Image (cartoon, one colour):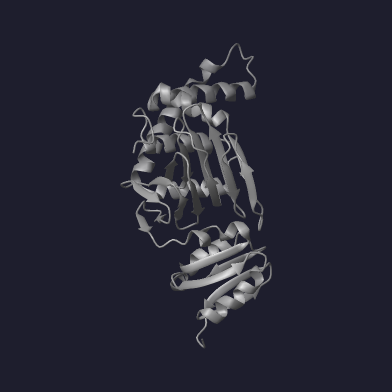
Length: 319
């Protein structure tokens, strides 16, 4: 599958997006953290980013070209600087592709949910997105494609069929491509999970693409490796949209990552070995406080409650 025009590789595209984002004065600490993780994920990421940044920085040496008899205000100068930088990146990636990419940036919208909140969204093409708790997406629709970036959390997509405009979902270094289908994307700190309820999707990271059909799922690790599974219960997958969290042989750290999006506080697992323990359980999203009791009964862990709603799960020798 080819996700991008030949004029710009996937890494070049991502590098250009980060270049724009990191030069935004309003860049958040969370974005900086995701950028650092992107750089660490692949040495090629850092190399391409440095090359584009060097070319971008070269514009700074031409600031005198932006002035017009000293009548340009600082905001105007910044705008013209950004325009020239964008033009330079267009040369790097190919003018045709970058024009399309800039169009997406200009048309983007952003949506997010609070702790414990689940929200249904209807996009302009009729696609319905159920956004999980403490989640955030950015939407950019163009003439030739439809793109959503899952910045954090979880989202379920019921994509309106449109063969002329494929639908892309990006989460971290993972890209999902569909035409019309129903699937779930869960972006945790450690990995991205894609699960299909109906239809067919293509998942790619840094390695070969993986094709998933109904009842199949894939987990993309930060390294780009993708592990697939065909033992998916689609009813369990949709449970969170109806206020229930269902897990079958799930790792404790993944369960905690989900629970923290519903919990008005923070739960930490101090021992990495505990995080790898598997758990099969079901919880109501509005009764997260009781989850700790379930975990203490089901696993050799104990919850140590601290001020500020911080709970630490540690080994329980007496279990």
